[in-house]
Amino acid sequence: MKDQPLDKKKAIFLAAVCGQTYTQYGNTAGTFVVPKGYKLVAPFKAVSFGGQLEWFGFVLESASEIIVAFRGTSSQSDWMSNAMARQVKYKYAKDAGWTHHGFTEIYSSARKNVLAALAKLSDSKRLFITGHSLGGALATLCALDVASNTKFRTPVVYTYGSPRVGNQTFADAFNKRVSVGHRIANQYDVVPHLPPVVYPLPLDGTIYYYMHVRELSQLTFQDGSMAANHIIADYFNDLSKLDPTYAKQMCKANAGFCPG
Image (cartoon, rainbow, N blue to C red; front, side, top):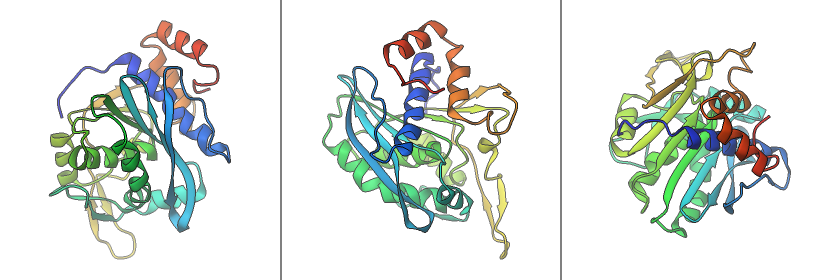
């Protein structure tokens, strides 16, 4: 992965896009606010723990860009998937190591629909893959898959408060094959510290190792609780300080689009 400066406006905008994945989940019909200049290509569902089928994100398209956005944890079954931290082989790229079982199962259940949507779109457009929390893990899994198996060889990844996804081999494969990415994490958010680097599996004692992908863009906000230090609205609010004029104009132009 190449080291590139954080695009402040894009980081603010995609945080708002991530916020809409929660709006989608909260509406039975899967409706949400599509920002001006974009159209909805395809919403998609995924299966979390126990076979629960849920809205998990969408694909958007503009004249020059494509966005794939994944939702974070919202249901009890999502939390159960988060807890499934044993590792499985990452099968969507050669020599790409091992990844979190729960995250990988969710991504695998959405993969067919996501890739089918991308197959219909032009690779002359820049592809962004994004997600918050669990959605950041799904975006990471998706990005390596897309870079390895589709015409979109250079996806750009923005994640927010993402947990660790896989072992060192997976992180190395991601860093090598995904051209540009920004892992945005609040220093005081507990989720990016999970699973721990060394994770002994309860009951049988099998030890797994977890490493973050790079490139880290560190935030340092404290908003009074563990939950507040993690939610997408507070990531959005803190990032908006990087370019408050742009954030204000974007929110004004897109009623209901910005988190909080």
